[in-house]
Image 1 (cartoon, rainbow, N blue to C red):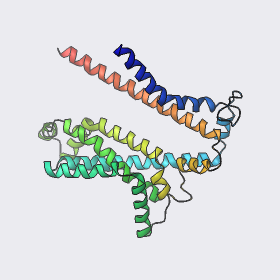
Image 2: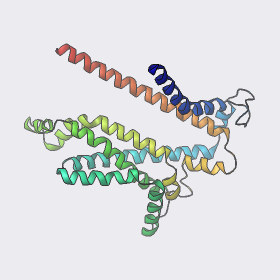
Image 3: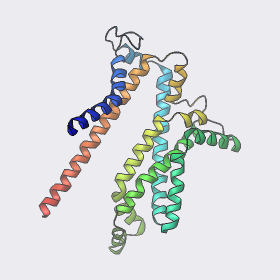
Image 4: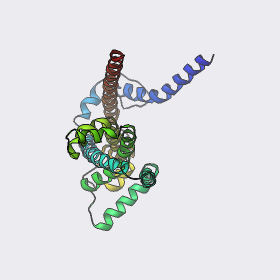
Length: 266
């Protein structure tokens, strides 16, 4: 009985999570603009999507901002995590708590604050301010993903590498970085995802020529959302799904190799 209820519960959770996405994908092939009546199958909305300069331009802006901001945030966040990890216990706890503030802070507060800061220092809103804003809210996610990996790492490995002839920089890149690489990759993926998804902060810190895809979609909702957005959302969902499947396969293979090596040692 309990197993049946558990399966029903899990099924309902997946239904609520993925039913809307399934409907979106299905209606991206609908021949009419109707959002509740199926009139026939077509690829027209996918063809029109790639001819829509506004959407393609906004998508390019979104990917460009996400790529640049996530890479910079990953570098800064990793360096910050290493520095925080080297602090004494009390100071480290205080800095980590401060790092949590941007994560739990409402996005509208962050967006308005950054906009006022840019206006105060006389920086014109555009790509520069948008990328700086995305780096700002992405750095904490990288730090919070890298710090646990630094805690799990054996601190004596770095010292052993130096004893064997490595200079500090070489020991850091050959020993520390490989050990914390899973945290760095996770932080990068989270930063990239949040950057693509962000609307509120981008709305307050972008200029007329730096509109991202969420802002473009929001402006379209004032009239009527085109089925081209359904097609674009379906493409993004499939790409993300494929990436996640490949990452899971890779992690599974790595785990199997580790198990096999441990078994051979025994």
